[in-house]
Length: 85
Image 1 (cartoon, rainbow, N blue to C red):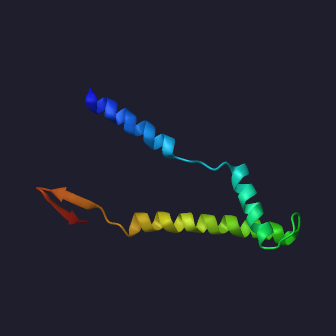
Image 2 (cartoon, one colour):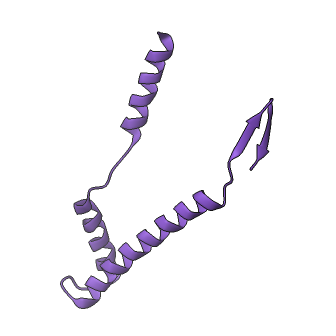
Image 3 (cartoon, rainbow, N blue to C red):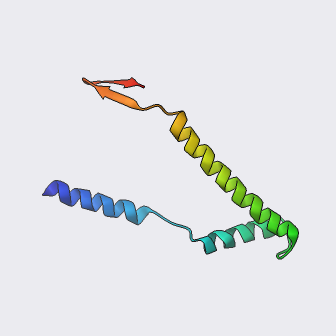
């Protein structure tokens, strides 16, 4: 019973620590960033700045996923020893 209580408590703490930025919050942050670069809102350069920020974010996400998937082979534990795949 103690294990179940501890597990539930750890799960609650983990979920409470997660923060999610809504699309509206992300857009506001990106807009402030582009404005700080000197782009005027509702201009083509401002729209391009917003697009570039989003494309950079997606490229970073893909690179992190690929790095996690291909560059970290699994570790196999067998008989008290561990081996790289």
